[in-house]
Image (cartoon, rainbow, N blue to C red; front, side):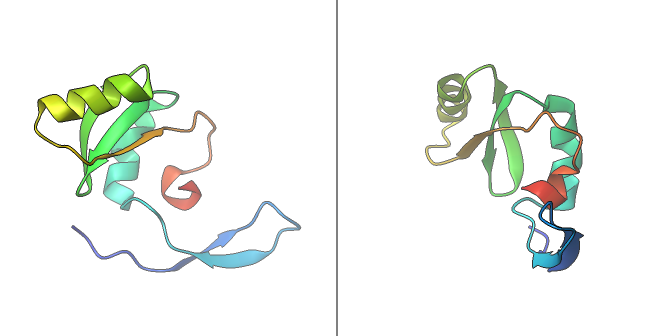
Length: 85
């Protein structure tokens, strides 16, 4: 998994600049762009399932013998995912 580095991004509050560590690597964020508004399961930096609900994404990951994925809904707004997450 790639090393994540701090980067300066603009905050939505009063235009302040803050240092923020992206939750997902930029490569994964680019993949997730195609799934805006959908539920995804991620394990060790890899996308392992996409579904219409959190429970479906979790169940799909379990089918692949992944019992502890991170499951979340990909934001549907246009802010870059690597800076938002």
